[in-house]
Length: 143
Length: 143
DNA sequence: CATGCTTTTGACATTCATTTTCAGTTATTT
DNA sequence: AAATAACTGAAAATGAATGTCAAAAGCATG
Ligand SMILES: [Mn+2]
Ligand SMILES: [Mn+2]
Ligand SMILES: [Zn+2]
Ligand SMILES: [Zn+2]
Image (cartoon, chains in turn orange, purple, yellow, green):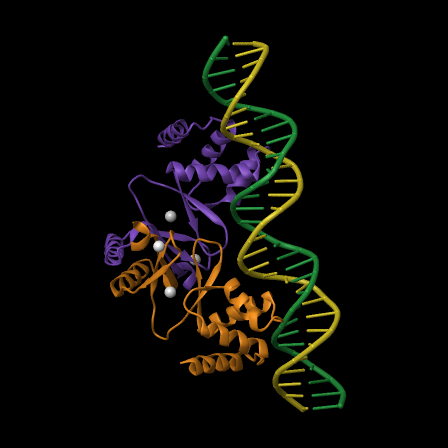
């Protein structure tokens, strides 16, 4: 799984003529060790703990590369911080975002996905990606 | 229509003990004269053209009030600028956003809305609001 | 309509996430 | 090893949005 992801990135890097660097290896390792929906700052702090030398800019730049490589997906919720989540090949999901405790519940709904395709088709629109976020209170926070 | 919206705002202002000011009147007039999805900066520039005195902060503050009053809805697309659109009572729609020409197509789909409610219910989640944005290329930009 | 109290305003400073810059470092090719 | 090009990180810059605060304006009261 992790090796597979590293291979995906290496192949992407090779195809783009990118160099293999210590920083990219470290950032990838640490990104792969995180759970869903890490903010750049969270990741940066985690990286800095073991590798004090690595700078903000490099983390930002590298996460964008992961995103291009198809390893990561950028998520923009409503708190002004960009988050990244792991991409699982062939899978897609959307989010229920709790504004009480900031937790995120993932869901998939094929019918919604298909309806989106229908709507786009009806307008001659070519879908690149989409975001469906439902904001509210999770079961725990409703009490 | 416009008078009705002004009344909604006046009632809201009254209920909140807000004062009636020249600036709020002007900003409301100009907001009501715009079409969908104006960015704060666009609106600010339009306002400044006829009323050079009005400041950025006031425009930001006032748009938030319109939003609270139920006249306007905040929209956060992927360009880092907050936009506002007109709220039509009892109506809701989502957006197809063209990344080629920045145009926005609105759509409504009751089935999607209901499926969202089902999903939320299944997770014991209380919906406050949601956003569904489909990014891609409009018919014109696909050519 | 003068007074006094409270809200509002706007210039300016500040914040905060992200991006840019650029000189020094490092990876890769020869 | 030298040449070349990409990469890095510190610091500065950016840009949207918010906070500050003294002056201005709205509103209630006598
Ligand atoms: Mn997710
Ligand atoms: Mn709209
Ligand atoms: Zn919660
Ligand atoms: Zn277009």
